[in-house]
Length: 248
Length: 248
Image: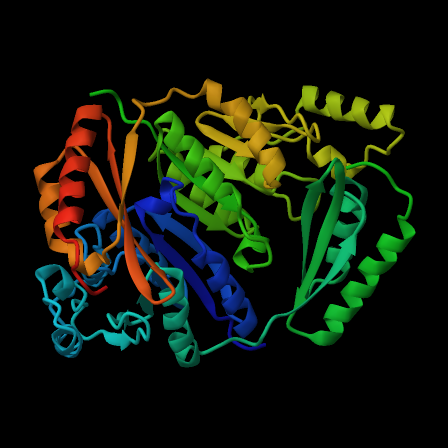
């Protein structure tokens, strides 16, 4: 069996915790990780607070193969991700020469003042590598296994596209699903038995409720295509045999 | 100044981490907490793994006034939240008599078998209080400061409606916002100065990017209405004075 590659995500920003902005990046990262065979194991949403960010980075970077952060790398006073990540690694957070020069040239060309606030976007932990930002130029960065990216979804997605080819990816997790017209109560016992009989698969049961009726989306995941089909077949048999069953 | 009431949320479920299901509960809880003056400080999304749930519950229940969990309380084998929360508190996880009787009667009345799987929904840590579920009956529960609720959004929202009146709520955080047609780079320096001049407010800057242009949503939060208006006025003056400025 190939090495399991794992990941965690840190979403940084008071605006998500206040409910003012709805996060769109978690779902996107999750889909991309699944597609390339990396197991996203944990997500933490933390506030724009240096200690909270440092603690999350240090808790997760040792526990998982990769850590991805979004948010807090813009030019305003509440953008403290670069300092916080530097502190987590015990590194200084100077202006990165290349980022500084790039931004300086960018603003000069447009006749825009290169203010102290804008200069902040050139800071990163000493020795970090850039993650290119094709949209607004100010780069994200990678330091060891931690990838620091923007919170604005369009920029985050563009940065992630640049990161993905640099990741070692696991054996891809295959998945298939079965629409089950029964509620979880109907299928619970038999589904548990099927999971037991198919130990190399992960069977997820996602209860749905709409307009007064219950149904279930069953998702089977496995690294092996034959084991996946065998489990799927067992589940489809179960669904057929339970036709007419009632209840949530 | 009144006591600050804080909260953390634990979202439990492999389906969120795989990207298959997009979470809708974080944004809802965040909005409700903000509305009633409780500061949501942290959210963790963890997989259907007992140790991961136990660790998150124990890390957060000591750090914040309240903890809210969603997911993993249905009848299938991957619904392990009740055991995990019991283990976090060092409590047994028996069938709760009243929940068991309620569910038994509910299924009997409908001529539906009360299977082992369905009985699982009656388990909770010894001594927990019910959180009523008006939609599908199986209750959530509260043990000390941890509130365990369903992951299906309609049920989660109904359960949360039952929990809110039981919470001590903080002084409500007032908020106001200013639409700023400039990117963060334009306003960063002056906004930092305004934040310094208005220490009893929290000024958040949320960069937006759409169709090639940058703008910023500025949100001011304060417990005091006068301080809020003073900061808002300073920001509006800044926005006006910067008219014509360019750049991201």
